[in-house]
Image (cartoon, rainbow, N blue to C red; front, side, top):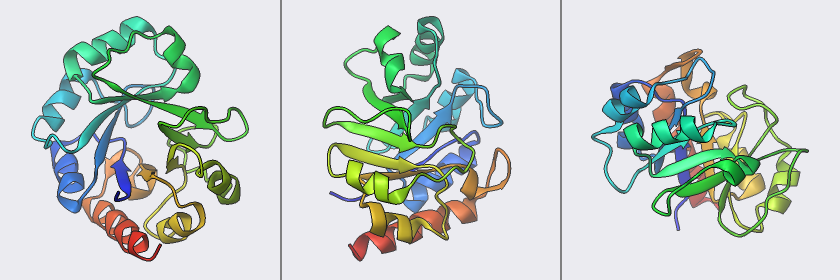
Amino acid sequence: MSLLVKICGLRKRRDVAAAVEAGAGAVGFVFAPSVREIVPALARASSNLVPCDVKRVAVMLHPSNEEWTRVLDTFEPDVLQTDAEDFDTLDVPDFVERWPVYREGLSSPAGDGIYVYEGSKSGQGETVDWSTAAALARSGQMILAGGLSPENIAAAIQAVRPFGVDVSSAVESSPGEKDPRRIREFISAARAAEKNL
């Protein structure tokens, strides 16, 4: 199975298109306080041409069930990504995949499904310890996040051997503004590194 590459924090249709054209397997939309925050209707409009083999991910942080339901009803995501403990209080239908987030030093992954592993704060370019991540990646399907960039993604993939990788701030020209060239560079570097495993 090929490496899953997720481009997160997308807001504009052209950036979603750039990610899909470059080979992203998932595109993430942030519904939490952030420079990358987007409203559900705009996320839907920005992603309505995304092919069905690319997952549209709702990225949230401790949402209320009401907030989650609003995103679900309007955006209709393929996946909900939020901190693992959040799923205890949310009504997530079976047709929506669950990608629990586990944060370095705070919680340990459980189960064998897809999960996201990152630092204590999302979207801050905070790199996790790759040796710790590599040990965890042997169980379950880890999407490595935090501090990844076109410059270090090859080393990260070599060190951790994750199921997938997730990038946001390092493919931007300024906070919240995606750079299509950086998106292409990241995905190209990730694909090249994957071939060397």
